[in-house]
Length: 412
Length: 131
Ligand SMILES: Cc1ncc(COP(=O)(O)O)c(C=O)c1O
Image 1 (spheres, each protein chain N blue to C red):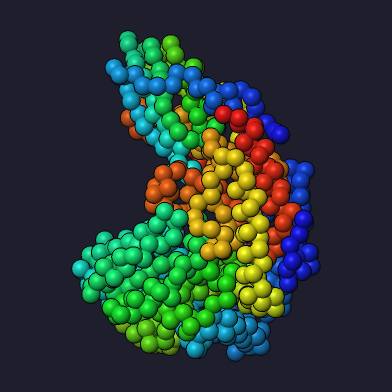
Image 2: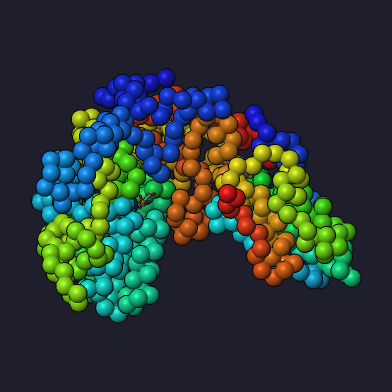
């Protein structure tokens, strides 16, 4: 059974060699792209080509391959900048991942700009990576944390947003798309309200940037953090985008080579943006791989990818909600990106995932780095199936069949 | 399907042996596995260095709960020293199924709880760290 789509999914799948394998005698159905996406040949080739032909340290050598490496590395910044609507390559800071980008903001911007008693507004559905850095900052300088709660459908409850945004609220840090509920949050509304009280907004784009067309100018946010590995790029490379004025005023996050202009024995001066925030030899091959991933996504079109995931999500919603004993968490399919988290009555999430694995189906089981959210649901763990541009309806059919098998195996 | 959910594992999961609490317990120990949220409480009644009664309560995956149920049967009547000698292999033999590195934490939660109760500290390394 197949649904109309503008993407040629079978042709896309040929670009992902990993998908072509069997697990436990079944064709691998990879339904865990929210954790990390698979990589197309274009990315593997770009990284391989880098190592085979121009591997050299960047920003240093005056010889040809070092210049080529520098050009390729810096060229990726332009690709990323255009992809998210940045104004300049100076606004694109390479980090290891979204987590490091958020920690950078907390430790650099947070320590320089916040004082005891200032408030940071988060949501209860944040990934630990957009929660713990703020807890650390709170312990260090005495800022207070507030939380937007959820309504019964798992949407953000914005009813009391005006009360939550106090005069002391200096930052709102929230996920653009939940990695558990799949909710695409109404960030525009929160950003508009935050501006009213003069608070800055950091968006955790770890799930939105890989799946939605994003333009930071249109969104009006101040910081955006995301990871390369969730958008078909390699691990070890992520991005912090921030408005240039903010970055100019922020102190360095880490010290070392490359981030300095002049170094004395007792003091140093900092390099220009973006290098001020990139201490040490960067992840050159990974940055180049990320550039190739973005080219790949652009060629297909982010809008087309988003629409394809919507179809898959509706399809999966219908299939899964028909299964007795299965509970899906979060809002209806129309309000979410390509993932569903659920429980199966009487079968622990890890047991479900283990049984799915026997059928060659890879899903995530656990709390997905959102302990507080699972506490709110009152469940220790959920199963999460997530979809991307290479997902087939047939894989969702197999998921549904295997879930029935899991339920019947346990027959409580 | 495969070995992981053999009938005896499912049977212990569905009908856990020695499930409950002991009000006069000599040793009560709670532990959990943060990875998947498995929880376990073990209650031991010890008289003259011998375990005369065992109960457990818990929530979690079939592997963690079946492991606790099987361990509880094994413990009844053992001396404290014998119980202290239980190790990872004891649990793996009881379960009798291949356990991968991730599920090992589930499988060994029962042992970890037991040891923490007997010694007062966590002594079980449930990570696969052998070289
Ligand atoms: C919403 C969200 N934020 C942040 C992260 C952290 O990403 P990373 O581990 O790549 O830093 C994730 C990854 O699972 C995520 O889903």
